[in-house]
Image (cartoon, rainbow, N blue to C red; front, top):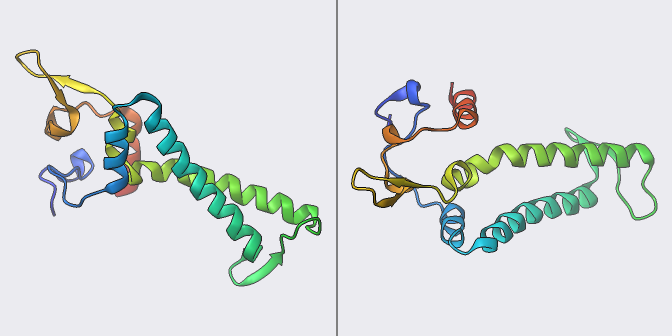
Length: 146
């Protein structure tokens, strides 16, 4: 609908439609070296800690049935194993979702383009047809939108 090339480019938009605050924060903090790593790591750590707190509060459940409760020094080993398995799946899902939370930062980082005169321009200002997307990103785009 909003993409000019459709399926062939993975429904890439020509211009930004919605402001993405997390992506913009990472783009701005990318100018100071360790700051972007701290922001990115803080976000990942925040989501992981929220997962652990939620797992401790409601326990391990399948649909609406409670299988195991997570209490300090009272959790059964099977429940702990299921909890670790769920945390591993959350980290895997978070790895995939980072492409949606901060698309420009995770795709390109601090890369710059050189225009025909040899001056640096930011990759955000370049039209998508001029970009060479990585094979990993194209696979993710095609798997998500086809």
